[in-house]
Length: 482
Ligand code: GLU
Image (cartoon, rainbow, N blue to C red; front, side, top):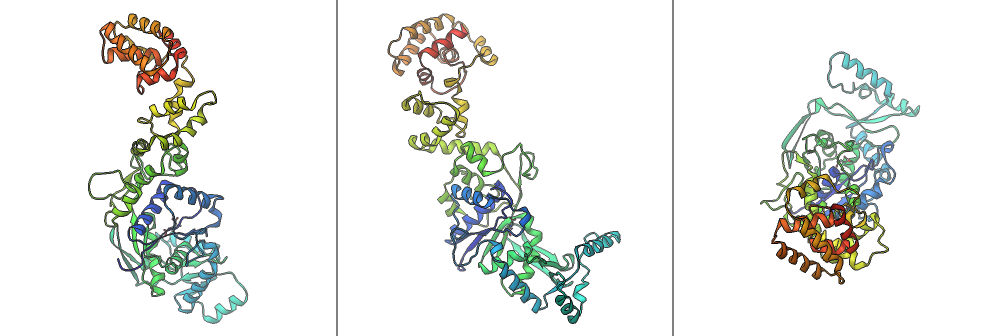
């Protein structure tokens, strides 16, 4: 690609960073970086009633945490600012007035109630998609002047010729065609001086020299309106890529209101998901490289990105896969990084002041292989902090399936009591001794010992578990089941 590659993510600050908009940001980012281009983050805040306090700061913070750093944005301006639409209102005014002069747009003095009445009349006549009746298009120049002098509020409306048509070649969908007569004349600038989305987005993309637009498929129907504005200014439009839907496991479109499914990046961040895992996971929502590998670093994804490989079918948001990936990335951390990452979660769950750092580190490390996300460490390590009152009935059932362990456990307990030096080596030797003495191995040796000592049927390395529980706790646990 010879032209300068510039892509943008243009969130409306109406909410927090969601899986869907993160995906949009991510693909725009990967696309830009793959071609050594620029990734711009612009704030589309013209829908002032829907703006949410703190949304911008939080979205930027979470994107940066994921490793998606804009080259140009509100707090890192480039040559194309301002990067917030409410600071660009004079630009929209200027371009709307140019369209008025070119007779591609006109003043519309109709009030909201007039428009509503007309809409209802058209619906009553059976028109399925009512359009503006062009009353104000027909006003004479002197009528218009008179109304302007009287300071009657007006919208500026774009004139869409009936015989026009709009085509674009979508990177995901291929050729898409719209007829102008189905669209109707639409408002580009409202009477309060605020532009509508379809107008502002084009002025911004044009002035910011955006070369490609990657966004959700809900914007396909907006694209013809946007193409009209490019045409009016004789500007070439960007290349569009409309990503397919993200669906849940029931194949329904993700709904932000579905509280059963966590969909915001901050929720995963709080629970202790790694940014590397989320970045990797989201990069495969609606896109894939050649081959079957699914684990890629940030830099590999930039290298591999290929805009011809967007998927044409919906992608499924599979939390189990995300969790699997997170576990994978946690295991890849060095022990030092892992401990620094997981320790704060344990500190949130339990009072560690009486524990030695060596004990805490060892405890955290025995769960490194199985830990799915940071906060899970609190549940996993519960037996080390809050011994169970009642042994789970399933655990007792497992015991009933084993035979002839009572004598061994009695001996094991006695030997443990006599152990003066509580070391991993001594505990390990004792277990070996039990195996030899009672002629048991594998499950028949380890399962009773694990259940009696820890009250759990599964867990990490048995010797370490016993060591970390400590002599007193282990003896108490055994006694409870005898
Ligand atoms: N502000 C729009 C949105 O959040 C941006 C759409 C676009 O990328 O053009 O959906």
